[in-house]
Length: 185
Image (cartoon, rainbow, N blue to C red; front, side, top):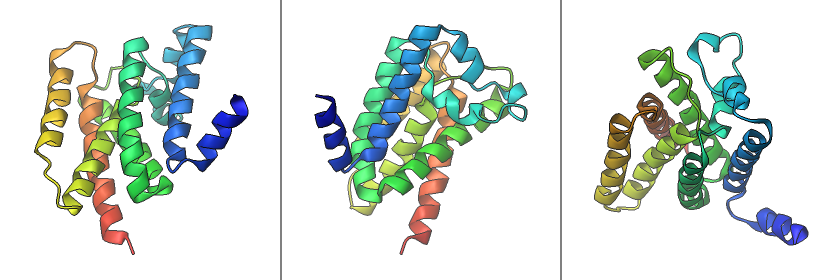
């Protein structure tokens, strides 16, 4: 069974999506095994940014519970399978990574005392990329904007959701996708 799984991942047209999902699953499994202390070691906390810069990335692979990891995992699965096929694995990873980092900067600027975890900033950046991809194909983005608006609104209504990271990730995804469009061959 394991050989079949690895073989299908290697043949996949979305290997970066599989890799990110695997890293998120490993992060959650590590939390399950080692406890919530991993949140404090790998989550993003602005006062520690310069002393522990890896938190800008590791925070995306630690989550605040089963529902958090499931929503982010499912969103990454859907968006990744769409976007990575169109822009390629390297560009997909670039958009995701820049969005995660810019989400952390959003938290640093708007809520500097907050500890945040999760891949949501990267996912919001992927929403931005999908907006431009869909627009480039002449698609209607109304339903995408409604989904994006609802997800942003939830962050303002439900306590404990880092809306600052969502906005930062969205901005990072917008800027990165625009730059990739301008520099494509």
